[in-house]
Image 1: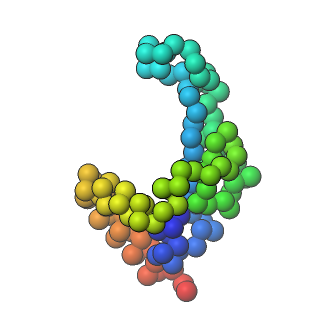
Image 2: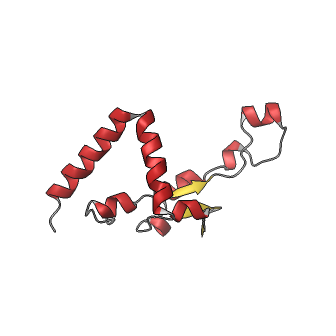
Length: 112
């Protein structure tokens, strides 16, 4: 969300949130730990966050169990976010360049 804002893009059309899906009884979890989470069929928070009118204009938030929560302190530290962005960009340099280009193009075509 902060990258959109820095590029001068409003969040009226694009929102960026994240969530903790909780512990879900996937095949891997069941094989390693047994049944200790919610059933896959009940793990619908991702669908809710993408489609619910309740969060239509909400951006830059962290959700757990369909509620806004405070993420770890590092998530709010701009230096830590830049370090993470640099690390991820080094793993996927082409995707990083495409993202930067898309933001530059969008911000230059957005009326101020």
